[in-house]
Image (tube, rainbow, N blue to C red; front, side, top):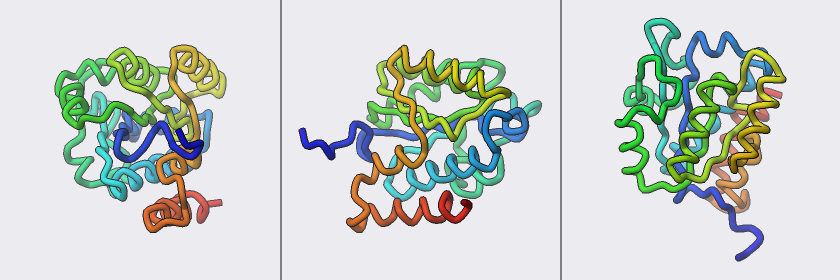
Length: 197
């Protein structure tokens, strides 16, 4: 295998953004909220640019609010098709979601979610139990304390989940900025991350 071959590719992965809702975002203290949003917008735009399945979930919308505007505006079709659930903490408890992701034929799932220690943890753990390879994008997550992030990511790594950051996930998917395809990813990074530095 070539050293430039990535494990997570546009052809084998789906992107799942779990519960990036108005109230869940307000609970994030471990990272700047703008970082979380920029990371999620980057992932959403990567999915759209590279024809990857993009799945959004919400929980208890009447109480927690709906998906934040920044993600909704980046991916309106995914927002309209979002998977809404009641109080179940693990999004994979939703049979419709399980069937939908299975139906994509993707064997790898790229995940970000709020909060890290609750809905993201159960989403990543659930995906592993269902047999998916899982990549968690840490800067698209967050919780009430840095300790909550740290301990959750350690536990996820111990279970076989790969934990990374947005820039690394994007470059793994794009692989070569010198190609026409790679230039789409470079532009997304410029718009969503570099321009905000």
